[in-house]
Length: 616
Image (cartoon, rainbow, N blue to C red; front, side, top):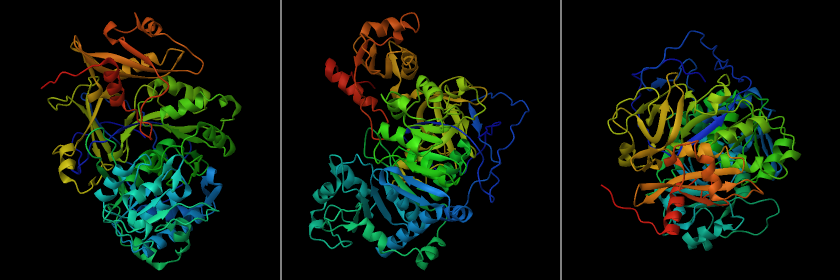
């Protein structure tokens, strides 16, 4: 994707909202297969691009946006290559061609209509990765149901909130996974299930929920009272059901299709509501950036309930006729390595901690990863040293960085394969097509000069429909001109390259000096013994805040605190050297790999007996 020039007056005026950041690395190969849309890469403009005079720029608009529903677009792809492999679910030993995937998803869509569900109604999915998840994604889109992604880490109170917030009428769930008993949690919330007929639940605590479907596996004979087997539900549908096509004709690209709950650290989660147009186009442009073709096979170990798996994985692949490969239900480094080798994968997704786990696996060198060329790294800032290892040791030579967030479907900035590697690993690239970004002074709101840090703001087609039935919180997050204020600190250089330097709330002020933890993390990553590191600010009576580093060492390594300080002395400013250092085995994080720095701060405050002074 190219970013040429800048426009100061775009705007469809629609609201965008704050969201958890996604740092994304991706790469590119090949061409796309469409005839309806000219997907031949636009020749790079050899004319010198004028240097930006302010931190504001817009993406190209030469490739038009897709104005179709997901179902329409997918059907057209199936017609082009019905016998091409669409999905491999390695842990389930399942394979689908594009025609088979279409048939199964239409059969499921028929079955969902048979439950009495109507377009616009909500159905939740509470599951790790499997073929049924993708069938649900396609089936719900086909008949206008809104798929509600529910975090598998949610427990009783969170599940109750999510289901009631968006009034889910149906839920598809895993029965159990490792130590988690999902059906047991549902029965705790809705003991009425024990005596209810499947599809006719009347629950005091879940008043909207009528149907609960559990994901059964071949050979599972025991029934779950009050629940319907997924296999039975699917068997009751008809791929040729005329209601499916009739319903699809009533849908519009701007209809909501998906709700994802934001994972904020305070307050109740907000339901980011996304449309066909939002996620279909973003998936398409991500695939364009990766230059995916039907020859590509994309390994997706990241969660499908998150934009990363659902959009950057599933939709990037399906919009380009590529093959989706799921290595396992939950992340397992060895399964990823084995699946990439066995399925000759050309692309691999993962959060930084996943790539680190794969690179440092004791059996890493046993596997042939030479088919890899591309992939996406996301979920948290992408460490430069890890990026270099991915390029050099995993053959992902064209890997690049991009930036986005759930409420923008998610990607908004991205680099190109022609960008020098040093630039690719040190920035999040240029703005995506049909989007605009700017960097502003957080206090005055003025656009800053190139190279000056400030808050990154964005707007464009990818902006979510709204927070579900929450106009007040939607409006709070967006200014009157439709700019989303991301809460991320960034710089933009004169060429338009964006670099994320941290979160506004993560910035540490030590004795009046503004310190960006990511700068220190990037420096510490260079130490040969350090595998991963997180730096936070904690209260200090003298300086207001002091720096604390939590460090994960590489396997078999040992280290003393003074070694870390000696490594910093004379290399970075004295006030940037962490005062408190802890060696840990892991960081607190969400299931998507987002590191929860606030939990590190809280733990250090407990360890050191610290209290924060109240400020105005």
